[in-house]
Length: 612
Image (tube, rainbow, N blue to C red):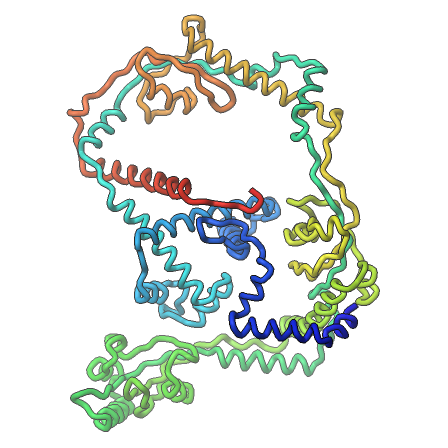
């Protein structure tokens, strides 16, 4: 098949197509080719902005990372299906996008200087208290950012925070409102309630076989089995390939030499300097002579720190006696670094070293490097690294071959025979959870793809933590209604609970309509902030009703009736409007305003989800 494609690629039509692609590339860029077919529809759009699958995946991984940091070894992401993390990530991204759009509508912006200052002062990007570009890039790469994308995301976050701060800091509250709030908080109410719990009523409810049959027929959607599949698969495992690699003594010797060289390359040096600048009062030659003079004085025994404090033009280090701290290679400009790393012993002092900043007198203060371990101490680690390195090459070659075969082979047997790979079989799994390789969401997604599930094609290569997988459907069990005999207990329980809930609601409403007919009221007296035996929903409702009125209300696990018997008010004029109370009320109000504004933004922005 591949050969046929190669042969056809030599024809005139193929050459015309290639020429067309080249022209489009040149005029419009690679994005034009990607978008020719319309592209994959974004999973979510917020207004005019499309939230991509990549953004959702990054947010999911960030959620998992946060939970791993919070719970450590106790966190097991297999306890949560992919849908849980995905839905949570989508909602967070929607809220972020709504907040950002609101901030941009307000005309908020972040300056480049402000971004630079925040990045440089971020502790995670610092080494020994100083910003380190390698550390910065490394951390961004681990989290899926480039420097530019991180700056964009940081700017977005800052704009969102500006908008929230504007909402919080511009709200106002009056002393009168504080006095009224204080008076209401001290208002005492006496009320009574009676609670009808569903669990207490269920046992007395009887259901017939006909009732069970009718309920089952009306609610068959509640009693469906999950659609499941089991798959056959072949796996290309990097670990298995690594275990098969030979490691010679020469390999070990070369790796140990590299290990020692790496330690040397990664050494850090502690350094101090005196900087003499060229300026309006000092020519270049005078600066060079002064630097050499100071070098001679320091070599003769004068205090380098005192000379730096008196003569250095580097305001940042002169207060510390010229100390620049500890730095790795690449921290200084090249002429400075060449001299520093050419010094042999701590305490050595250079002559005048010219850089773009002026003339430096450099003192080499010390070496900081990881202690070298013996060959025997690191042999096992080196062997593993060598095997891993050799395996990477073999894995890459076999992965390419596996990809080609997955495209052209008719069955897993063709791949198994060609690459001597064992065909394995999974247990049944559904779209949301599985075991073995089906723990991986990408495996489940591939297994339920239409071309694999319905057309019974081989999947593409799926890269998992265990290795690269190609799979094919072995068995498929579609969703179906479970027989009544299997779910009778569930049906009976649901039916009883539904009727018990209706009965509890009826009893509560009857008690509210005719309080004299009830004898088992429970009396409560207190203020709104006090806890009581009454359910929270009952207590909240009691402080919303007028004196002498009654109501029925749903409560957790049932329904309740209540009657307000007495209200003892407090005069607001007698309350002190203290600054702390006014500020507390203002902050509470501002948070409510923020929630209200977020709700407004959601309600006035078109949000579309694919498939919704």
